[in-house]
Picture 1 (cartoon, rainbow, N blue to C red):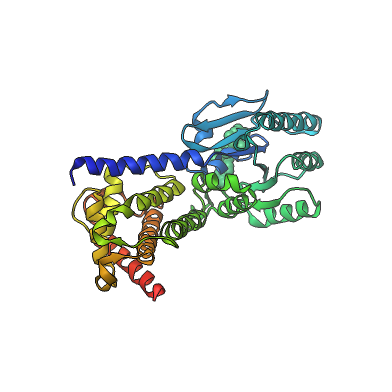
Picture 2: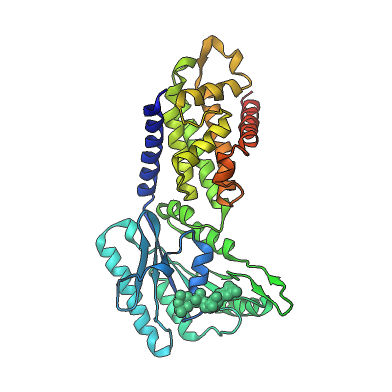
Length: 377
Ligand SMILES: Nc1nc2c(ncn2[C@@H]2O[C@H](COP(=O)(O)OP(=O)(O)OP(=O)(O)O)[C@@H](O)[C@H]2O)c(=O)[nH]1
Ligand SMILES: [Mg+2]
């Protein structure tokens, strides 16, 4: 295996990764609420990239700006300055309708506005009748979620929440959040909460076509990422190595690698991580337990095969569909564990490169292989 092959493998990964990102489309979210209510803070706590703070945004209607970033599957529509008051309510509704109509006109599904987060200060605001009317009007166009922000004292926010719920608005739900910690007089931290629930509820009400993008851009719920990543592993294992799979001689096992690279790229895309060649190589070679710092497919497969408890006794020196599925499932499951650790900052690139994680990761794959072999018996 020369350098050319290694490059090919990484190039293949990059191709698949980019393909995944493009196929993800976009999720389009409107954020509304009075000035200073905590919209930017909420966005910061919810999404992995801070698009609304850095750019100036693109004017879409007189008072709505769209924030986006290349290769990032989220568009935020910020209703900056759309100060909602009794006499402005009609105007505000008009702006939203105009936005929705413009998007519908494009006929492009991935341009459609998917949902609105309507923010109300959870600790000092009242819920005004004109806000209710606004939410009901907008709900005709898209699901609206009410977010009670800046919650310092929970009981006050709970009271507001139940008052809003009594009004029976058309909003999909009401959530209380403290997007960023507060500190009390003694310097004691009041921990952030509520963003996970908000993000998971939003995921659940989004159209399926936007859920993949949501899984990628949100950073609050590891559960969403993990569930989607598991689905990728199952789909890869069953679609590629199920019925009709012809047993392969061990020596040809390198033929499995493109499928597995595709799986790894798809999982990485869900986590929204940009992995450099050395980073990815570090992860994969540590998992597989090679000391080679290369991403060479043949070495990779040869090493995984050595790890399979039952491979040695496999019939006729071939790898069956169920064996290929087992390998793939174990590799995918182990990779998900690693992605969780990378995402949460538990593993750094430095640690991978220094080899500090090698043993732990290699044991991780062995464990997953054992687990899958047991299931297969
Ligand atoms: N500690 C803490 N501070 C918050 C929270 N939400 C908002 N704030 C603070 O409240 C102020 C206003 O919050 P922003 O997020 O800027 O509000 P905004 O709605 O984006 O304001 P505009 O863009 O000006 O309309 C900032 O100083 C935030 O740090 C929170 O959950 N926790
Ligand atoms: Mg702001």
